[in-house]
Image 1: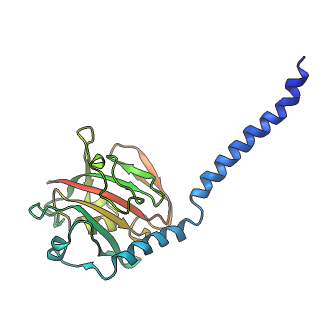
Image 2: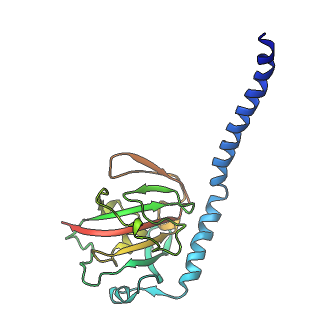
Length: 217
């Protein structure tokens, strides 16, 4: 009576194994040609930005929401790089974190994503690298259930820090950071504000949706 089941068992194991193999291949495929794809993503943002460079706080204030612009980020070891930014919300009356030594940290809501749209760290359900036409929905705003994070200036990647110096309190920006002024060419394990750790893949372009909340003395 057990023979039919025993005959069926190898087929069942084959099907389960095939499904597992497909999942593994799909997971690996997400990161195929990772460096080239990340550099192509930044190149597409750069092409859309054109010659729209911001080098002064006055020009940063003049940028209208929805317009892509570039900020130079001086990075040790990789020379001058650029981060690409777009205001979603402007606030020309807000204080600006110049990091002159008086303010060593800021409070901010943020979410960081890979080019795939996957969050690697998020304090709210904001826009990702795939949301090229943001803003699109008020449902993407931080809510009363979200808490801002305290960001120490000495723990920021250089691209994030350079962009943040041009922001004002109350503003919301999308920031696109090439891997050269992000976490670099190797996998990098970071400690998140909640005490957990996360490994950021090498050669990852980083996209941040940032809402600057307040200064911390």
